[in-house]
Structures are given as structure tokens and as C-alpha cells.
Length: 566
Image (cartoon, rainbow, N blue to C red; front, side, top):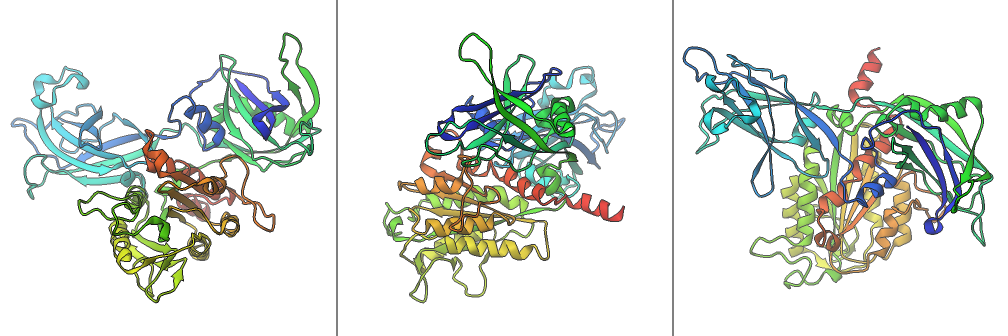
């Protein structure tokens, strides 16, 4: 197995400068690919696959279980279920049976895929396995034949956000009213199954690329693929696009062990770096014949081995995601009293699109915010003093913009609809600048906070350039911005802000964004497909978080403490 690097011109996706294939060295598992990158996303999503998740192993132990055996102690076994949205329980796995023990620590692990972008409720049940069933494999046991010892439930996020990734739950009965009787406790510990945190930071440059554009120079990017046993290539990374340049120098990238699988895979890159030599690009032949050797060469300017920490490493050490919301109060939403309005609050309890976005995003992120006090603003509305504001406190208070929990956001939103007149135009700049100011101020006293601003809007931006300027400035801060488009407006501008085409945003002063911090999803497209608005919006967030932390060499808090004490 080896790596294949190909250079392309961004216009039309044409193969423009050829590829440099590094020598295959050993076979590896084709499916072991990870990384928050559009090249990887496209590869898997084009095949209808959900590629990016973290595999977790749950270890279970219990304390002070009930003793239901007469001549000895209970023989406990634990069963873990995933609770579906319809309330149905789907069994994930079972532990072994531990004989004659009221304080068991099971050896068997329960494997589950952690997905940041969804809420994953879990149910744990403990049974006393009757002696006559001890010779039967646990998977074959009929649970209705065993004695019930207790039940507990939680959300997977509650486990992984604990600083030691261990959550202790009280067991209770699973029928009728919950009585105060002591059923004991169950402790759940989560560990990532990532084999290694090894990574390499690499910087590439090219020289003498072919020019395939008529009126300017090529706009090259570099795509890195992993060669698998079959000889096919699996993409693992794509660099940014560098405009109008035949001698590009790309920003350093970091490849994890999950991506390149083996140190041997990147061995030839290390040799290029150490020897200060270049690899020659080849242009594959379209007919039966020899590949064309180009003058273009690839150079490795930097090659550094390092330890790379995961999203869960940061979260479980005490890092937090602080949730913020901004709601569009422009007149294009329609009169809130009219059932056709996007702001209409249905007496039957059916959520409008604004409420749905707040609830679905909020219920995921709230687990990563310890105090659950969320800044909430409105924009584009005529407020209590009769002036149009493009960033007003949703709760109507002059002194404070925070509300308590997702329920507090919902209540403040409903109240504002009765007290704020819809106006316009649609401006994002002030809201983004306010969120950026909060994120920037946090750096002076707490670098363990990362901020997430949710903007819900129905309209076309009036201040597109001002918004771009604000986003470019904010790209240096611990901040990501999620935008949900509701209604039937033309959201082409939002796609520009999202910058998923490989071109980073540029400000009016030609400054380029440090990183992509925006994810946009139109609600109508989500409703017409299979993916939820939460999944569509939040899938890039862990990657944006990690990009910020890694670029600034910010390590998990427990690692920082260990290095300080050393």
C-alpha cells in the first residue's frame, strides 16, 4: 500500500498536471479511512455511505446489585440497547455472565458508533441469569426467562463529555412507578477504538506545473489518495485551491494514522523531504501506450511526526461547545399571525421551521455546554423602542442576552414574536461580529471553549460583502457558524459563504479566511431527502473544531496539565 498524489486545475475538474504515484509497499484494509475533508466526504457520500464516525467501546460495571438467589449471590449480565425515535429498543450487545457477584466488572465490551451530529439514547438492563442457563451462550439467552435486576438510561454524549469518560447511573425498576428502593448503580466507561494517535504534518509545493487555462494560469490543488491492495485509490485529502499559480505552495496538512494506515505509506514522502528531491508528475495515457513524463515536480517542504488528538480527547478533558442562536425577524417571513407565515406558531403544537431548527440543533449541542446558558439574538426586526435592529436580545432584556436551555430559547422566540415587528433588510454582519467578540474575549481567560452560532434565516443577504469580511475575521477565532435557510428563497449567496467548493472566502481587503467556519443547509432540501437537518449541519463541526485546535497547537486539558507538571 502506498500514496498517490494528483494535481488538478479547479476549472471544470480537469486532470491538468498529472499524478505522482508513490511506490506501494504493503496491503491494508480499504475501509479504514477517516478525516473531515471534502475529498473523503465525496467518495463515501457518492456511494450512499456515512463514512465519518468514531467507534466507541463501552465497559460496564455495577455496584450493590440486588441479591435474588437464595443459596448464593446473583449471577449478573448486562444488555445494552439503542433507543430509536419511535421509542423502540434495538439491542446493541450483551456482556458475559459473572457468577455469584453483586459488584460485577464485566470484561466484555459493547461496541457502538458515536455520531456527534445526532442524539443517541441508550438503555441498560441488568439480569440475574438462572443457573440452569449457564451453559448457554449469552446471545442465545431468552431475557424473559431471567430475573430483572434493574435498568438505567442516558445519552451517549453524556458519557463521552465526562472528564474521565465514566458515567454512573442509578438502576431502577422498568415497570410501573419508580419506587425509592435501592437497585444499585451501573457505571459506563467509554473508550475510542482508534489504534494510534500518530500523525504526520506535511507541507507540499510544486514547480513548473502545466498551464491549461487560456487567459490566466492554472488554479491548482493537490489530491492525496491511498493505494489499496486491489490497486485502486481511495481519496484521503484535498488541499486548498491556489489561484493563478504554476509554482504553488500549499498550507501544511496533517494526516492521521487512520488515513494513511501505516508509516510505510508515507515513507517515500519522508525520503523526498530528507533528500530535498522532487517527484516527477506523470500524465496518464488515454490510449494504450506510455504515460507522459511532465516537467512538473512535487516537493515535500515539511515532514513532522506528531501526536494527534481526537474530538473526544478534547471534549472528555473539559473542552466545551457554547451554543448561540440568531433568528431572522425580517418582513419576508410573513405576518406571524397568518398560518402561511414562517413564524406562525401552531396552537396544535406543531413546530414551525425556526422552532424545529432550534430544537434539533440545540438538543445535540446542549450536552457539550455545562451551564446550558445560551446567548440568543434576533435581527432585522423593529424592537421595543421602535428602531430596526440587526442584533437585539431575543429575551427583550437590555442587560443580558443569555437564556436558560433550549426551552429558554423557544420561550424567548415566542415572546419576541409578540413584541417585535418584522422589518428588514437581512443583514448578518452585526450578529456575526457580536458572536465573534464573545469568542475573542474568551481567549483571554479560557481557551477550552469553542463557540457555535446558529443563524436561521429566510432571506437573501443585503450585506454579502460585509458578511464575508466578518467571516474572514472570525476564521481566526474558536467559532463555527451554522446557517439554516427556511422557506423558498434563492439561497445561492449562502452557498458562497459555505465555501465547500475549495475556495476560501476573501475579504474586501483581499485577506483569505484562515479556515472554513460556515456550514449552510436549506431546510427544504433536508426535508426532501433522508438526512436530518441536524446531521446535514453538524457533520462538519468536529472537523472545524479540530482544525482550530491543531493549527494553534492547543492540546486537551489533561495533556496540558501533564506537560506542565513534567
